[in-house]
Amino acid sequence: MKIAVVVQGRFHALELMQGLIAAGHDATLFINYPALALERMGLPAKYVRSFTLHGVLSRLLRGQKYEPFLSKLFGWWAARAVRKQRWDLIHVFSTAAEEMLRARPGRGEVIDVMRGCSHIRTQDQLVTDEAARVGAPMGRPYEWTMQREEREYALADRVVALSRFAWQSFIDQGTPKEKVLCLPLAAELPLFAGAPADIAARAARIRAGGRLRLLFVGSVSYRKGA
Image (tube, rainbow, N blue to C red):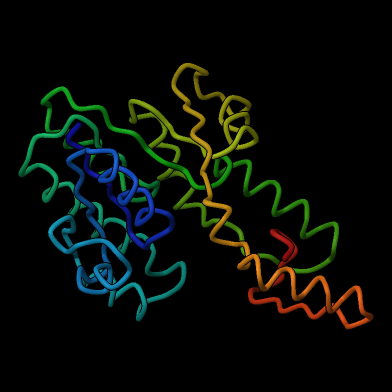
């Protein structure tokens, strides 16, 4: 298949592209990361179309005031860039899709909107409830963003959810069941395991009374935990 993957930011688009190419698909990534940076991460530049200026602006202009401008700018660029070729499937991450959906190439392609979380109204309600429960402020989606995403869900041929919980949230919010596709993410678990010799040495040390030493790299939040 000839597939366009469109995302502002990165999320799991790099790994998705690597999987599509390995499976023999003709895939191109439309993104606001520099192609050379992605090449260092393992995706050859020939598979990438970059709107690097948008990536720079999105790091300089932050907050609710600039989100409409940045989302519309990337959506406009992506819609124009994608129209230059024919595609079997256009897989767009949410908030980047409205302009493309309204200016469809009209060549029989399927346009998916990929939502990396639950339905945005469900997400907002969960965050609101949790903030009230713990008595601490939490970042909620902007109303402008929620309305934009809901328009994208309505215009898309399919909405792609990444878990059964997220899939159910779309059904609960009124999206037709047949329109929502549950496509869970995968992980190569061996990449997260130590070498057998290291594991054996560690186990021997702990059995001999040595301490269990833990390193945590990340963040802790009310919404996601550790």
